[in-house]
Amino acid sequence: MATMVDRLFVDTNVVLQATFRAAPSHKACVTALEAYKRQGADLWINRQVIREFLSQITRNQQYMQALTVDQATKAARILQQDYQIADETSKVTETLLGLLEQFPTGGKQVHDASIIATMLVYNIPGLLSMNIDDLKRFTPMIDLVPVA
Image 1: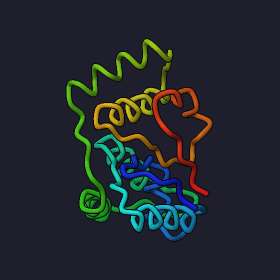
Image 2: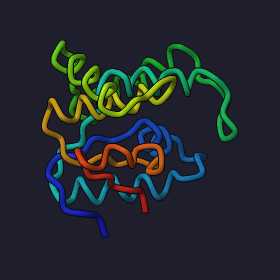
Image 3: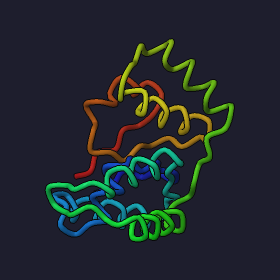
Image 4: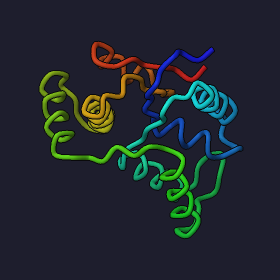
């Protein structure tokens, strides 16, 4: 059963898996998202998630061929309709820099810290993700919600 939340940030991996039926965790991600929607939770992403989504779907994956630019932009526009969008403001950037100082982070993990910064600025308490281990260091600040 889904944890009760009223605002939930949805990680790129969940958005991607929920979008494509052939994805290995498609059913679990769709089930989780539908459960939160039934609870009335606001589902959030940011522009970074859209960029990461586009990056993934425009190259071949184990479960899908790369989409054309037209197909990919159409899919990204659908995301903007399906989710609340948290814009990346200067306050998000300052919060990110503070997080990087507090939780020394580098490389691809900066993307994780950016999501957490967005959540903090927009007061989004929960993060629905399939990468729980990568995000545990942020649990003092946010609630990690794994896809069942």
